[in-house]
Amino acid sequence: MSMLGMLGKVAMGIMVAKTVGNALGGSGGVSDMIGNMLGGGKDTQSNTTAQGNKLPDLMGKLGDKNSGGLGDLLSSALAGNSVEPTLDQEKQAEVILKAMINAAKADGNIDADEQKKITEHIGDVTPEEIEFVRNEMSAPLDVQAVINSVPRGMEQQVYLVSLMTINLDHKNEALYLDQLAKGLNIQQQAVNAIHEQVGAPLLYS
Image 1: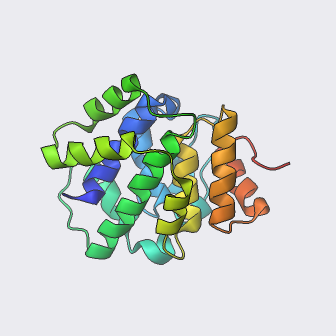
Image 2: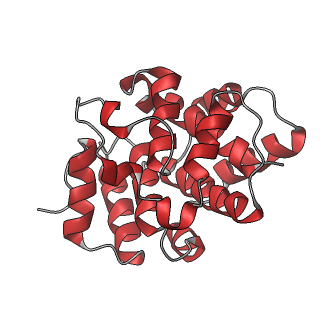
């Protein structure tokens, strides 16, 4: 089972189910955004969020230090090309995948309708892969497990993909992001800077 391939499929499925994908211009916009967040994909200066704000180079390079080209591989995979990730890249993809699924539960849970949309959007996968996704979606919300899984250097990368997975229109989502930021030792100023760059409401006043 390729975690890299699953990451792209599940990420788009979550964003469509949570209506984030529509705001970002459909699956094409989502795939570009995901690739950029991981340090690859198209030029970040040409990508915009729902609010029309450009994603600067900082956002596109968050994963450069430790992602080892993960973003480029993911962008290539989403474009339908065959890629061969390293073991480290597969582990990083698994961390990000689980972080995104966990963040999607921050407003309470991933309800049956959302689960259906996500699994339908995943497309052609093996029984093992669909079982993995279903287990992750049905597991209890566990921010500490996400925090414990994040390798040094991927903290802001994981925070960013978590932020972009939710709509931040629910108190529980803000509380989740606060716990995540504190657990990952990301300072409030840095958190607000990330929110500003993607046009999301600030977490701290």
